[in-house]
Length: 310
Image 1 (cartoon, rainbow, N blue to C red):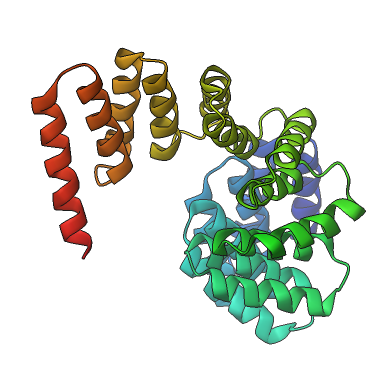
Image 2: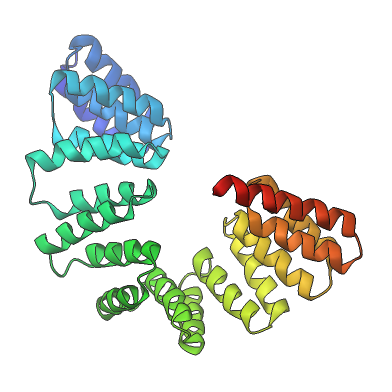
């Protein structure tokens, strides 16, 4: 009869070759022999994670903490799962507990900082990213993360500076070109911004941010057809946001393609019924094609939204 160590060893072999069903059977058998086996539960959590059964993985990890309270590896795994599921406050709580145990580990502050970023707390995110860089001054992940927070805060000079530092170390970092291009655009340096967007897309043709930024620049310089192509690509890459549909609709408006413009603006309003720019652009399209009653209805909606924001 195999021992619990035999079962755990064989389960790991099965896990390594991707035979999750066999690995799970062995971990289950190990748990039947010792219900307090943290190793068996951790193995089950890894399988559930690999199978994208994130809630089951989280339940296993919570059970492990009852056996080995405060285990940093378990907490790290919980933080990763919660981040993946968008449970950012739970992720932050897990990283808080890890930081209390190993406060000199930069990656904790980077991971926690991104969760603050996802919660919209850019200042606290920036504090964590700066803490990570204090601990590891040349850490490219920390430098890039600082630039991300500054991007959200609209600090374009700082974004450019930090992305310059990232690209000095990693000249193939597509996202860094995209962020720098965005900030260069807001510094009215459209030529360099376009060059950065092109470089980002060359390195990663699925980088939605770069298509969006280039689409914005092309819109502003009146290259409406090319802008639409970029917004098409951004949507293909998963950037199905109200903003992108409004921008594409805005370009269709200038090309006097009212049908496509109205379709995009309707989609934007479905995604965000309080998006004022969508109603504003749609009102302009309605006026363009002589549907003034519908235009007035949209402008009335704008007034209601603006009053609600006061």
